[in-house]
Length: 438
Image (cartoon, rainbow, N blue to C red; front, side):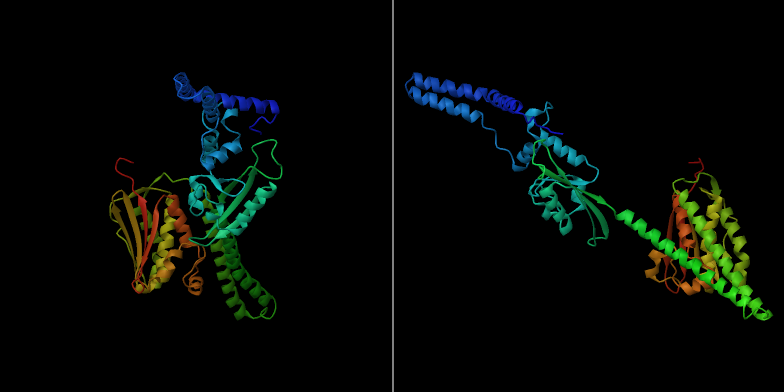
C-alpha cells in the first residue's frame, strides 16, 4: 500500500503544506528579524535594497528543513515523510516501533545493507548489532549476506537455513523480504529490506531425537526377532527331531519373546507418560506405603541374588501429590537397577528424608559405581553403560528414561551421584503434602 500520493496535484499540495508549516514554525524568528531590518533601514544603518535582500534570505532559510540524522532521514524518505499522515508520532518512530515489536529477531536495512532498525531479539540472535553499521558487521554468514544483496537488487524474497557451531550448536532460518513504500517505485529495486531470523534449534533437536529413537527401537526389536526367526528355522529343519536341542532352543526363544514384550511395554508406558506430561497428578500418596510395597515385591529377586533391601517401613507416613502406580514404577525401576548393576555390594538401602517442604527418596547400592562420563546420559533412551551386561540382565535401556519422565510429570527432580568403587545413589525429590493439605 502506498504511503505517498504520487499524483502531481497531491505532490504540490504536500509541498505547499510543508512550506507553510515551516514558515509558521519560524514565525517568531522571522518577525524579529524583519522588525530588526526595518528599524535598521529606518535609521539608515542599511540601505533599503540590502534590507529587502536580507528579509528574503530569512524567508528562504525558514523553508529549509532541519538537518536529520542519516538513519532518521532514510526512514522518513522510505515512509513518505510526516506530512502525509495525520498521526502525531513521526513515521520513523512508527517504523522503529513496528520492527521492535516483531516476535522474531528482525532488522530493517536500507538498499545498501545498512542497519536502520534492529529489535532486542536481533541483538541476542546474531553478533553485535549497531544502527548505522553495515549488516555484514552483525551477520557473518555468506549465504545470508548474498540473499540480502540479491533481494535488494531484484526485489525477490529469499529464505536461507544455516547452522552455527560457536558458541553452541544451533540452527537458524533467515527470511529476506524486500519492502516498497511507494506505489510508483522501481519494481526491480525495493526501498528497504526486512531481515528476520527464526530459531530452528529445538525443532532440529526434536527431529534428531525422533530419528535416533526410531533407529534404536528398531534395532532393539530386530535383535530378538532375528534370534526367534533363526531358532524357528532350525527347529523346522536340522533340529526337527532333536528333543534336547528343541528344549534348549525353546527356552532361548521364550527369553527373547519376553525381552520383546518388556521393550514394547516400556515403549507404551513412555508414550502414555509423555502424553500426560502436562497434567500434574493431584492424588495424595503415602511414599512409605509405596516403597514398602516395592521392597516386598522385589525381595524374592533380591534373595536370589544374595542382596538385602534395607528400608524402615515403620516410620510415619510421608504424603506427596502423585499417581500411586507411576510412583511404584519409579521405585521398582530404581531398585531393580540397584539389584542388577550394584548387587555385588550385597545391600541396597532405601531412605526417606524431609528437606523443608520437600521429600527426598533415595536408593543406594554398594556396587562398582558409575564412571563420571556416563552420569549425564543415564536417563537418555536406550543409553547403557555396558550394553552386553544390560541385555544379559534383561534391561531394555528405557528404565531410567521412564523414571525421569514420571518424576518430571510430578514436578519433581531426579539426581544421580556415584563414586567408582563405592556404589551409586539415585534420589527423587518431590513436594510434600503439608498438614494443612497445601
